[in-house]
Amino acid sequence: MAASNPIVLHVIPKSSRNEITGWLKDADGQPVLKVKITAPPEDGKANKALLKFLAGEWDVPVAALELSSGAASRHKRLNVKSEALLLQLAKQRESQQSD
Image (cartoon, rainbow, N blue to C red; front, side, top):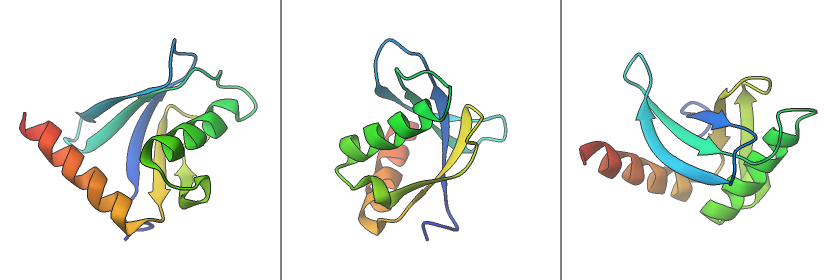
């Protein structure tokens, strides 16, 4: 499930703080998780900080998260190797979109 159903992220580097701002919809109506990261987008610093931050927020090891695309872009695809986390994120997305 994780490899075939990646989470789409919109990452804003060089932000004032690390935070998950919530679920949005892209132009095609697909869910996108917006995340702010303090690290600059140079030499992979923002990507490393993103994975470390998300792992901490979601209480999973960094190894359970993998960027499958978008290493040099603000738009990224994140594979999650934890079925429990995928279910939790799906519930969060559904509850936020129904508000």
